[in-house]
Length: 266
Length: 314
Image 1 (cartoon, rainbow over the protein chains, first blue to last red):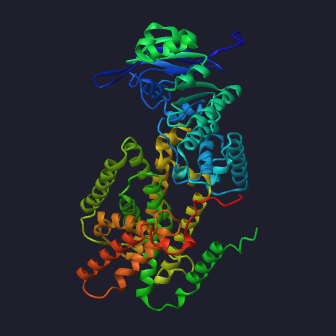
Image 2 (cartoon, rainbow over the protein chains, first blue to last red; image 1 turned 30 degrees about the horizontal axis):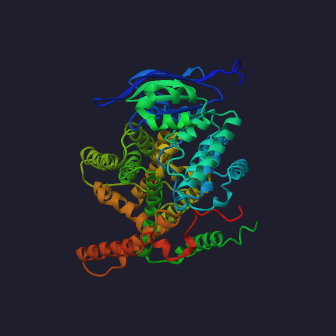
Image 3 (cartoon, one colour; image 1 turned 45 degrees about the vertical axis):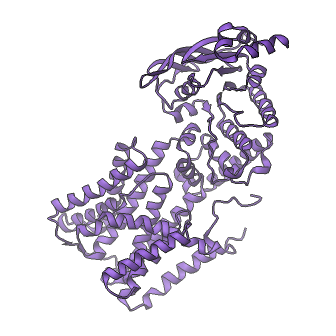
């Protein structure tokens, strides 16, 4: 790794968030270097999704700041954050079900449209041209992800794993700099998971930084450069996969003894 | 690509020709009256439907219809302005008020928003009752343009027809462009739309503003046509019936609201018997339609359907 050139793309500074009496996040801080894959793990209810919601602007933090590419994005509207290049996917499959897969990807190209709404509504020649370009781009993206055969299917009728891939594809269509993937492999078969691992590697190769919440430890351990462990809203540990798998506290809170033994055996 | 060969465009042209050419020969005022109200109702149904399709639980369309109508009434009767000056102002005024309403209530979603918009209808109606003495007031006719002096129903007919045609054309354009897709996306999944960089709040308020502005224009046509305007034309029931037009016709289709408006405007006029009996038959007809045709009247013919399915090979 060319560590000399790496700059910090995301800096999470002491985030706290309370739901009623429950402290969902308490003073969470970590840094994400550009071009890395960072995993966030922790038991259920540890605050991983809350953390994602706060970073992507869907929740406002009680305390703390989120710095993205050097500027403060705390409390900005989600669409503004997405526009600046920080884009998330959703834990539940969230697609526009009564539209074709291609339409979904095209909606995700919203930020790439240059022609204004008035000329678009009037379908001027430039608007039509742009529509064609976007359609081609969307088809190209689906092609690269091997989703082309589903382009005319309604997304609600597609298998779960494919829907998730389309979800990732939609996030990629926004041309993000930092991609937040919320449990992308949940409910996926092992074949689909393998495809997704390849895909995330490919995303990194394109220079997109990835922040990954995941329960599948195999995915986390094979992909991530660094791992952040959350427990009861607090950061329990941070480090490389090896450091994390040896960390006593993490093993106790999340990984479990069995995992440690497997690791040592391997 | 041969555009004339497209059956849908051909249908539109044929319908337009019939609607332009035939009415001058209709000497029956009753029939013309129905046609004019179909036009006004179709405009209201189309614009309200676009708002609902954006995922806004909006039931206050009639409030902006009333604002348009009373803007014209006040402008022409009390301020002695020309109708053609006040007509665009009525639309802009209704649109601006909708923008303000949309902005103020931007954090309210779903059923609470529906209740707010119901309250808005009552607020506007009661304001009218308070400020305009509650009695029906006569509204002057529009000023003549050359020989077009609005002394006959047919003059209003062409005016409404032109306006409804423009609204339909606008709806068609919006639906064909990416805006139609994004509207659909916002309704289905606002958070996802937002996370893809779409400014959903702004989008919804602007749609509300434009559509309510057009409702204001419809009101501005209604006021001089009805000649006597009273608050009883702008009740919540009317607002709900506007929504019913779109649902009975088919809210997912371009022609749905128009067909629904036509069907439900004609229906009570041709029903025999007393008013109370008519209402029962009317309501039953609506129920039967909704029960057997949940997708609306448009589902009777495949012709108007499936505009969302992408064209093969496109």
